[in-house]
Image 1: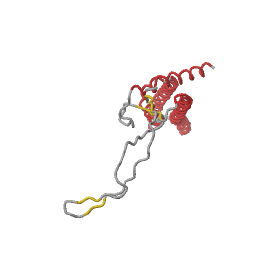
Image 2: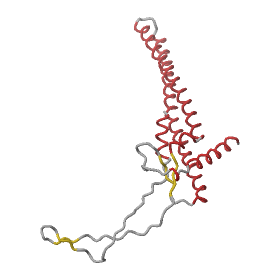
Image 3: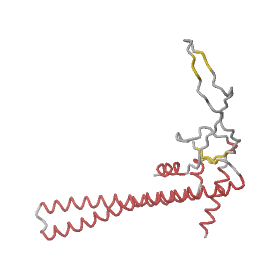
Image 4: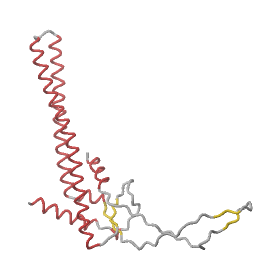
Length: 212
């Protein structure tokens, strides 16, 4: 379940992807004429010079460190894991007991040990117990939706904090970096890592909120 949670979290915490263009073309304004090896004349396509883009200030947040160190996420994960374990244990225990009792009921019914009224009464009880199992299943599904909502809350907390943080930093891009194979960033200069600042800030906010 932690992997699923991390997986969801890895997807929705991606803030921005920076693409830097370093292209420069020079040459006359008129098309060049090149002579091919077979003596035919080939006209080169016209390529416009790229727009001059000023240097950008880029930093990144390490998603792996953030996932492990953000207290809000740790609390959500621990709470969800405990609730899921409880639901799973209840479902397995009640499900196994229902199966055993139903098999015993069938043996008695097939052996002629129960009257029609007793058979009907027992069947109604089994139907009610089956409904209880179905409710546990629905609670498990609802838990997944709850986790998704809390994960979205974590993403919003992060982006809101970074927006405030950037009022002083004035960065053009704040990327997320992960060592996973799906990370859009293949190389990150450690000097551009602001994870510690972000983690300290959002944890401070969360701890203050918990005290209220």
